[in-house]
Image 1 (tube, rainbow, N blue to C red):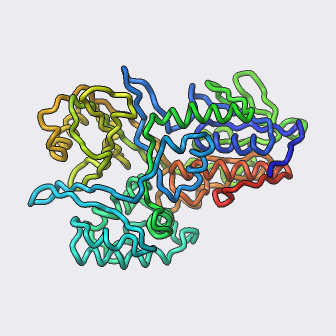
Image 2 (image 1 turned 90 degrees about the vertical axis):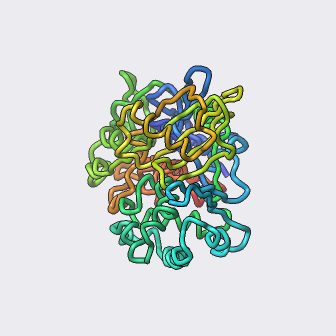
Image 3 (image 1 turned 45 degrees about the vertical axis):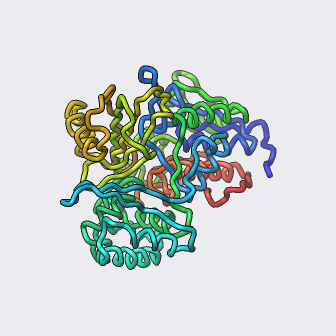
Length: 462
């Protein structure tokens, strides 16, 4: 049920990423007059597309899981669910090229049995671990299932040490735990908070048989997170201002808020600040947080994306991941990019790429083209029509041990000013799911500050 808001209920959302879009939609659904400000010429934040010649390129490969219920709400809300379908069942091809006996393909997959038996058959047949290592994974998974990700003590422990204490060999960490963890946490096990790792693995692998089924956009990211999102915002009357950067937030004499934008002042009864943590620190008015400088202690972690266009088809499956190679995850983006003809466009997603993020393109080309030929025999002799990289140096917050104490909740100490962003205290790592959940939480906090409630079918996302 949506309550009618009085005409004076005005909200300004600063930041047009997934968190800001979500907050704006929820506030508008509750009847508020909403203005959304975004400094870039597009919506979507770090989930966007751009043109390169005749192709539409995503800045990086983004995926989600069936357990990401808030992000699925977002897709439904903007009319994009059909454009980002999920696998029927989890099935991840894993190619190991580091074996002395030669490359070997394995698969991480599930069946329809209840948790935890849904993964037992797949793990039993996983060729990249020994029988003893596979048995050890089962024991560690059971121990992981007993952890409470909300326990603050877990945030002080690193995931790598916990895995070692639970008998996980370096090979097991490489071939299983980091295979999943690096892609979802954007950090290796030793650099990851046990609390966040437990959240990922408990929710994705131990909550429901289909929780880890993978989904991704079959169209350019901008089609969903910019075009469709803007249409959804327009439909509920949100005033969206692109290329518009807020410079300050001050208290109005009336008791509300004034958002300063390029010489203009926008009045609001509530403000949602949905920008990266350092930018948020610069805009926060005095007294908004007890220790605002904690925001500056939240580190960041980079993602490097390598893009290769071949003159022929070299990969038969939609994606795979690799062991024994610097290559992490490879996706076929041919159709989504608009590439026609016999060629194929592959996108490599390289998470936690601290050592490579600033390497020259020529050096990355020398490193990754031979690796792709080693992984994909059909690439040997194929012509490379284009090779380029996209770099997100601050792609996510670093999920390091202790980060939990630095992440603030949505409400601040000053009524009517709320925070959103994947870096806030969502309980999730920096994912699209976490960003959307933060938008739910910020909108709910803003409505509470106005003395209003707004029911929504996805209450668990708030």
